[in-house]
Each structure stands twice: as C-alpha cells, then as structure tokens.
Amino acid sequence: MKPLRIALTKGRLEKDTVGLFEKIGFDCSQVRDKGRKLILPVPDAGIEIVLAKAADVITYIEHGVCDVGVVGKDTIMENGHSFYEVLDLGFGRCRFALAGPKDKPFYTGYTAKCIATKYPKVAREFFERKGMDVEIIKIEGSVELAPLLGLSDAIVDIVETGSTLRENGLEVIEEICPISARMIINIASMKLRKTEIESLMGKIEAAKETV
Amino acid sequence: MARYGSMIPEGTCDQLFKECEALRDVQNSMTELFKSRGFNEVITPSLEFYDVFNGKASAMPQEMMYKLIDSKGRILVVRPDNTMPVVRVASTKLKGFQPPLRLYYNQNVFRISPSLSGRRDEVPQCGIELLGISGIKADLEVIATAIDALKSVTDDFRFEIGHVGFFKTLIDELPCSTEEKEQIRKYIELKNYAALTEILTDSAKSSAASRALIELPRLFGGAEVFKKALEIAPNDEAVETINYLRSIYDVLCNMGLKKNIMIDLGLVQQIDYYNGVAFRGYMQGSGEYVLSGGRYDGLSEGFGVEMAATGFAVNSEAVARNANIIQKSNRPDVLVYYELGGAKAAFEHMETLTSAGHVCEMSDFSTLEETKEYARVKGIGCVDIVSDDSIVKAIIN
Image 1 (tube, each protein chain N blue to C red):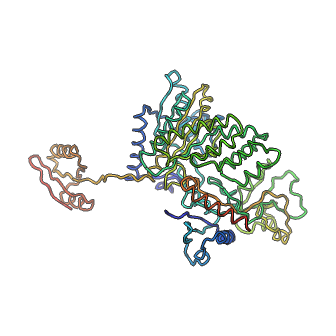
Image 2 (image 1 turned 45 degrees about the horizontal axis):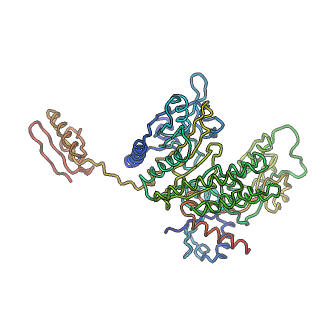
C-alpha cells in the first residue's frame, strides 16, 4: 500500500504539525533532520511528508498528488476551494483585518478608497459584501508600507499581535475574520482511502484534545 | 511568424498517437455500451445562446463560459456543458416523441479554468440522458449504466451515491435565511466539520434537523450509513429518502458491486440542479471525479415543458489517462515500394496485405535506397518491391 502523502506548509505550521504528529507517536526524526530532501518518510505510520509553500499545498491537494494538507485559513480564502476542509487544528491563530493610519476615519468621504494587500481576493470579497467600490493594489512584501508612502488609504492583511501596525502608526479599522491552521483533504482520496484518512483524523483530534 | 503563431492557448493541448488511441478506445467502449442499451446519439452545435445556460436551475457561473457575439449582437457561448443542450433538444424537437427518450452524446465541453491551475479548458465528455421517466427503475438503469461504463475500462474505481432530498428536507426545517442555508450547504459540501458544528449549535436553531445536519458530512461509507441516517432522520420524508437509497444500494450489492460503491449523504453539490439521487465516480490516479450525474427534473422548466430527467457525464480524457488500456502497436509491418509503371499492382498488393490484417505503408520515395533507409529508421521489418510481374521481399530489420 502506498503511504498517505501529507503536504505541510513550511515554517511555523510545519513545526506545530510535526509537534502534533510526535504527540500521536509518529517518528518524525527524518522531518526534523531533513537536509535537502523534499519528500520525507515517517516510518511505520503509513504516511510521508512533503514540505511546500502555503499556496502550493493547496495546488498539490486539488490535483490529488498529495492526499492530506495542512495550510492556513488565509491561504484557503485567497486560493479557492475544491477540497475537503475537515479539521481546525487550533494553532497558527491570527486574523484578517482592515487597517489604516491611526485617527484617520476610513468610512467617510465619497472618493473611492485604495487598498493595498497581499490578499486581493479576500479584500475584494470583503468590500463586495459591504457594497463598496474600492481599488485594490497587490503588494508582495510589507504591506504596511503602502499607506505610509501614500499609495493606499488602508491595507487588508493578517494581524497577529498588532505590534507592527502600532509601530508604524496604523491601527485596526475592522476585523474581517479569524484564521487558524486547517487540515484539508483531496476529494478523491477521501473516497478512495477513507479508512486510512479517518484513522489519521481520529488520532489528530485525540492529540489535539490533550494540548 | 507572429508572436503566438506557433503556440496553443493555456488549458488546451495537442494529443498525439497513443493519447488519441487511448481516448478513442474509451469513447468507443462507452458509446458501444450506450448504443447496446438503446441510447441514440445527438450532436449539438458547439455554439449555443448564452440564455440556454442562464436559467434558474441550470445557472453556470458566467466566469466559466467562453463568449462570442453573433452578427445580430446576441451573446453566444462555446458549449460549456452537454446536459442543457440535450435537454433543449428533447424539450423542443423531440417533444412529441414517445417517452422515455434515451439519448447519448460524445462531444467536448469548454470551460474557463483559473489561470495557471493546470486544468484543461477543453474536456471531452461522453454520457447519457434518460428523459421523460422518473422512479427507481429509471434511476437504477442510469446508475448501473454509469458503473458499467467505468467497468468497461477499469477495475479500480469507486462509485458514490447520495440523494439531495435528505439534505433538502432537513434544511427546510431550519428557521434561517437563504444565505445562512447556503453557508450550511457549503460547509457540508466541504466537510468542514468545525464550522458546521459552530453555525448549527446556535441554540435558536437547535432541533432534530440541525443535529442531523451536523452529522451529514460524516455520513459516508457502506451500509452502516443507513442505520445512522435512520437514527437521526427527523421526519417521514427523510426516512423515505433513506429507504429509497437503501433499495438502490441493495440492488447494486446484489449485482456484486459492494466493494466499488459507497453512500455519501454529504453529496450536496449543486442542489438547485439535482432534485434526487446524485452520484460520482472516482478512479485511482485521478485527483478529481471522472464521472458525475444524477436526477435533474427541473432542467426542462426553462424550455416550458415538464420532463423528468436523469443522466451522467464521463470525462473521457481523464479516464483514458488513468485506465490501463493495452494498445496494439500501429507500426507498419510492410513498406511497399514500386516503380511508377507498377502502381496498379502495388496498390492491389497493399490491399491484399491490409485485408490480411497487416499494417502497410506505401513508400512515396523515388528511390529504393531512400525507401530502405526510411524503413531502417522507422523499424519497419520488410520492404516489398512490386512490379507488374513480380514481388520481391527485402528484409530490413
């Protein structure tokens, strides 16, 4: 039987997931000590782990080349949705928020507002729900810079503690939604390998309880 | 050449040789099956009016359709789906025909996929529509034909069956807005257990129906699903739906299909489209379903008639890619060479060889040397040198 292939988002979510797997009793030594390998076996657990950038985790799951993935809700909201989103893993918590210069009212005036963001789809849908026309500019790096340089009126971004915002004279105008790490599953894998996946989900849920 | 002159658009592909053969094999074995069961082919235009796909039940996101404008300024689309055109034909041109109508199609659909997603925009589909009859026997015929269509090309497949009626009777009991209901449906479709539980444990909505809805995405698997579903079914209608599915499941198990089929009551995609059983087929190697279908009695309403309808479509290309089809080699066994005067004899000789089952190529080179060199490069075993009164065989490889 070929192992279940699990794609993890590199970085913090990877560390938290590996921690969770070790609590279940999986031997993740090869993941911790990975060198340059990209596909990492987990002996005796019937799984192997692939490390990828967040958006790529979704791509691999949608195409079915990986069966299970761990990815942030932020990436899911920005990159679409043809897979099962079965578990909220509880870690990687933060939120999407609309933020702008402190003490400068945002929802006033009639000129169209300009929003800088790394998440154009999330931003567009947020303002669509409000029925507001805004201009959205995609920024790749530190989004906080855009309103400081006068490029945009506000930003839509992930906010964890809010300290970066504060240090740059910005503040949260409105929260959009909370975010955390999710376990996602390819639709065909869920049907073709139901028992293995349900058993893995059961173990993860049990380990999550004991955090 | 202009910039894009030697390229093809994203989402399309050229298929060559064995790929074509595998696709045609799949299409042939499926259409042969459909024909043997009394289904008749329809070919509909590649261009249709936009309005055909803009009805209440049939609505397809306009972002997914390739559009053109005709000479009178009307919006056309390049056929994005096969079912609507076939239902259109059935509700207009075949209106007076004795039902049930058994129709099949084998033609491509065109859909705009998100950029750089690696998805095909042109998808070959074949499938059937059984029109003008409802009831369990019609559902069974279509489901059994769908399973047999997959069986004709692979042993390694999984077939899941659901019924949108179960979800509909549950959601109708909830006192919430259309938007909230859509949200709940979405969470069930995505098996988002956490969000579903959260939205439904809100005390105002707590009822037998809401508790049943929370369980819905987990209700997939074998016969055990029916037991659980009957325990949580809050009303007679829900019980009836489960018993209906159970009867279908039992018949299929009786036919020896138990290991291939499963029940999924969380199959709630496109609930405005389907109104009864809905099913999907999966194959090892494909990350998406390769077959989908169900009952959609409401589709003909847009054409002003009432016509029960059920059917399915197979993505024949995905099947061809993943089915292990053994292909016979199409490499020629014989190359026929002749001097111009011997043309008649050469063509007769080719006729003799091909009717004996050989694959035979005519050499169009002007010299025998070129012909032999070509045979060597292509790995053709034998060159037959034909003239009016003789046939000389030259063994090459």
